[in-house]
Length: 421
Image 1 (cartoon, rainbow, N blue to C red):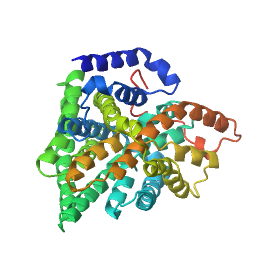
Image 2 (tube, helix red, strand yellow; image 1 turned 60 degrees about the vertical axis):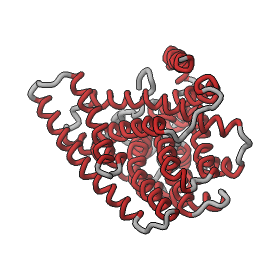
Image 3 (tube, helix red, strand yellow; image 1 turned 90 degrees about the vertical axis):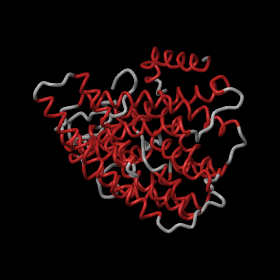
Image 4 (spheres, rainbow, N blue to C red; image 1 turned 180 degrees about the horizontal axis):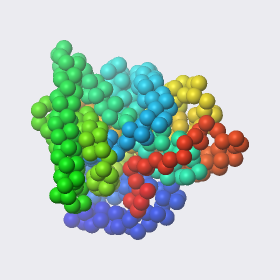
């Protein structure tokens, strides 16, 4: 009971000072990870909390499923197609190169790590999370084209990475258990997920749209319907042996199209609910893995990989992907740096650790992912505001307006702060 009161106190204090903290680039992930590290003995007792319990996995999976559905359904085709060239470069070229480069470096730096687990490390850390760089998306000085590109990238890359993570986990399990059907099982899980997504996202979306057009719904009932559909897409896929994350993401895409983007308020409600759940995930991450990392002898190979993951492994593929785009060097560096690792990486790590714990998910692997997430929370969180301001001022001073500044529409910022966009 005392632990719950401490969590409540931290949450209330953050709520009261959220706007002030945002101006200092101290967002919710930093606050709740820090609270978890400091308060772990009071929250969980002397025995501490474990990272691979069923409640932690359920919380993490529910959070990511809701975020994937909300991100996919809220990303209008206009926002995606307007800068399809830039976002396509980052997702079609940068993301695969990030996975490949990360795999090669993990294999070299993490002793005794087989290729499959090295690849799993890289893919877990490939998705970006706009929540850790919210001051970038909310700063009007940053060209809208750059904000929109980062927004679309973060909204889509976790969904793209999900089937790859699933396939690598299946391959790792198959390799340890001498099975040969790992890829087949992974492919079947994705096909089942797509089928469930078509039913839940398409069917549910059309029902809500028609009821809305006839005046049968209320704002509250629409909020309820959307969040239930988001959960049903995940649970339904898992129940039939499919991949719940792929189902949630695809269902969101189909739902957005089926409702003709008329459920914006209800989608925001689902996203806000997921945002609150993410605070609990960050708290548990801080009290478990992050606390172990900072209080135990440091694994310098894992820390070295984390440093490279946030710099070379992200920034070199981004630079290669943007070759010929006309972007200035400062813009390429800016986009390359703001690829924070957040909620998707945490959830993928929880799932991988749970699925592979009995077959040898090694400590260096967990520590490399953990250090990367922890450093990203701190470094990207603290630098988002100052660097966005400095970059925005630099670009605004360019005459004539650079290619970065094309378009004038405001993007809809994703993964909002507690007190607003």
